[in-house]
Image (cartoon, rainbow, N blue to C red; front, top):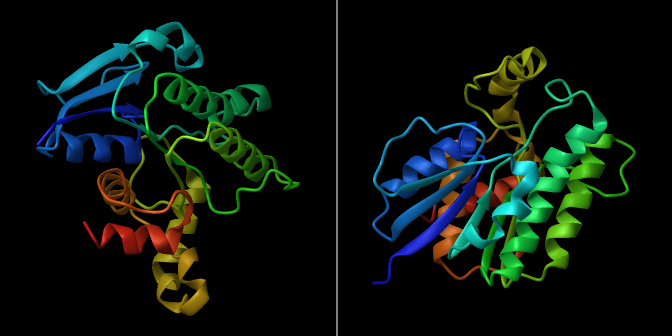
Length: 221
């Protein structure tokens, strides 16, 4: 079996760090390239780190080679209040990564978006996510998976008071969300990571994947 190389953007974040750990323990992968501003906590012979400014991915285009790309970057308007900088993170980095993937003939590209992404939305956050999705799809990468999770559970390093309160509410209310409302249930980052690994290693239709479908895919792994 040919072992693969994967690229992770956002490996120091909540979902990205879990994904990295899972890929390191997966025998199908021989190398994990991490492009980040800071070192990852894990130490492993499979990891190949490139400490860079992710706004300048084009400068390392020749190093951006792999079998698949996982883009797990993202911010919040509280963490990045300047709209231009926010756009550079949530739109610019994934869009550039998709362009490099297409240019370097990487056939599998995955990106974490968000429920409610819509390029025509009047809400800035949803609009940027929608524009990002469009830019990624424009690259026509064979296996493109845009994951649209609902509120992501788990403990983050940075403080997000409103998100913390909402998670507490949702921990009670999740069981009330049934049928077509199941997609609004909180989703754990480990489930997202499992779904991404399954998608990269099995035949599945390309396109956007809502939160409840992400959970169903993860159960297949």
